[in-house]
Figure 1 (cartoon, helix red, strand yellow):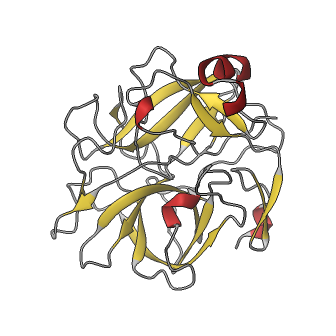
Figure 2 (cartoon, rainbow, N blue to C red):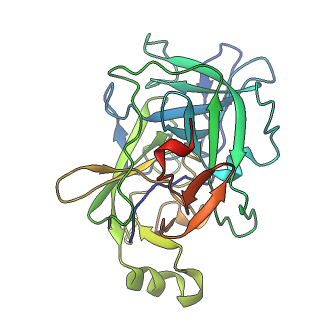
Figure 3 (cartoon, one colour):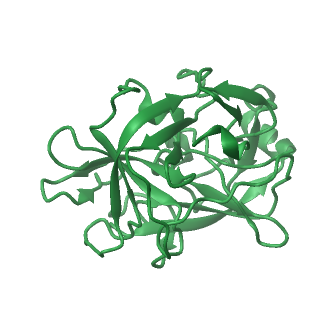
Length: 278
């Protein structure tokens, strides 16, 4: 019904020539968040452009397996899908300003964007990133868990990314996390209007505001837990500045409809055939 794997939409960051990405003030925010602990969010990736000779962080992503990562479709719009060696992901990252020894940096060899991605409506906002060499899994680098098809999500979810703790505050380099709940379809339609929420979406967020991933790292994960606290991963569909700080629940892709992406079968927002991407 409402299985979750989400990608955040809006992001912006830059890196100084030192090679450690640093964020522009006010562009990447986990509003109301707290520092993540080492190894707490091992599926989180930093997605970076190195074409200018230094690492430019512009999106987040999630580890699918040793060879593939999952990200938002809009993050790769306009990129060279077949020769993206000027792009890289960094796994095991916690503090952008410190070389902690747990980082694994891997360039990309191929990008597959959802064939039905719509940059105007941001529908089917998903892409997969093929890594040029495999990741090594350890305590700090792990794949994100995928829920079974038809699993209904409820309760609390964790958004993660690198960004400010408060609206208008400084942007810490340490990975941030914040907990937000799933919101019912009825509540979400009341907040946005009937025509704004379709059957491909679900909602998550705090309607009174104060907690959000406003303009947080695009492509980064939101992980939901069922009644047994089993992680259900997800990609956000973030709606822009008016959610910063959030006053409306977040519209998120629902994974009930099949689509084709390259040679792999995908739902709207969730890869559920493990053998389709190698």
